[in-house]
Image (tube, rainbow over all chains, first blue to last red; front, side, top):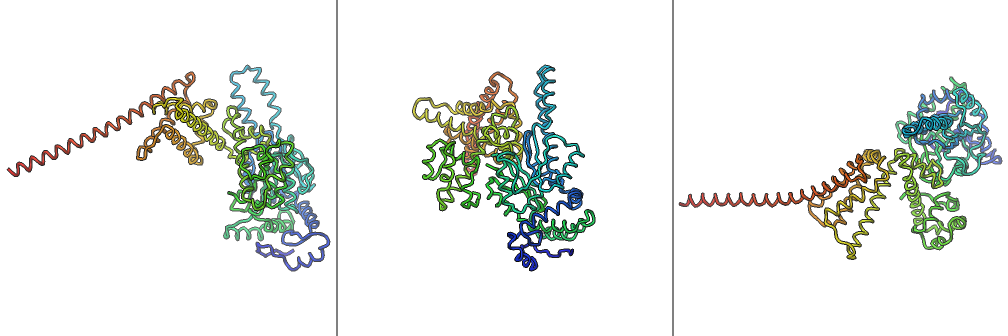
Length: 307
Length: 294
């Protein structure tokens, strides 16, 4: 396993890759797996294996690679979402449940504030009535909000379920095994669809976007949190340096897996930049598509509405 | 105008709500080829209308673009209008907007289109009130022109206009202080100031102001002052039907009228004084010269 020293940000194929592609032409169209070229089927398999291997150390690696900043990114996503109680969220590629747990926390606190405000207005009711209304609302601390976590990888879901049990999240949570390109849900079901650091690993992004459009209710919102393109040249060089020199080493030291983290860094480079992803989302039929860069473009949040 | 890519495939994809909006909104400006489809009832014939309506021609890309662009804004307007009825309960917040979206059959996530502090809702409401006021004043002006009503003197007209405008706040008076504070946020000041000045301008226009000198600014500044102070008095007025507020308004308008009289009096007095001084100066100099000559 050699360290990839290539700093190319353009879509150049290595000659070895081209040879392999010609041999596998019968097996399907060419796709990128990091800086390699593979067929669609191979890509899906390889990505499945990557996440199978890293599942147990996924959260630890996230913290060490991003120096804990990924938590801030996910919090910002939650604030941008601003869900109200009663929202039905679909978290795709949500594996270990980070977004889902944050959603439940947010909705719970909003609901508490709502209840407090209602109680303040109940100044002139009798004690009996106040007691009754409090009882009724107490059992509804989430306000009927629900989150469905969908992931293609069984290992990631397993880790997520264990985490949920450990942290004490019991209600409002469902775990579904499914492929983002072909979701096992009916049309017009969800209020919000999120995919955090997952769309990069989807082989056919356009299919995933179309599925997102299908399962959202009219008025529903699509949110995508993903690594993206840094335009500032100085920062870009520092970022490349960090990505290619530090992250695979961390992967080897902490998770014992150099190759998976090499793939991670390469896949970030191959992902379409902000404007291109915005155009793809618009093509799927979403309106009011917009993106917000976090940390100068290291991460971007794309948002669109099904109108 | 935001440039969107409209490949042929997009026209065939059913946009869940916007097409419905454009079908129901019979007043929308559209190309003539799609006009005839509006006569048929919207719900049942929607699948037939969709491929034909918004896809007049690829040369008509500009028309198609602007039609969808308008629909988005109109949808937002509809959501905000529907949200207004939830304001007394939820305040001027994103929750009210979410409830409004629900009544239109949209998901609560549609409230994410707007800012989370409800500024757009308040600005929308203010702009709607201003439009209502303009229409009211225009109607009354027509009546006067047709001779069916008497032309009011200026102070009465101003009082009537400001009162009519402030009465529109009465259903939301409990939560209006919150709205005012949001309007004063630095982000919202340009828009709210814009709305305020155009409303004051409207009132003066219908009052018959045709000044072209510095008076134009003075009048608007004075009326803005009257309006803002009356609004603040209204916030903490607890008298039946806000009698105290209208009396306050009457006094302020009378003050303003008196002040303008005083101003012109001061000016004429000032002129008289200056003339007197000039005369005195001339007399003194004449006396000096005649003494020198003698």
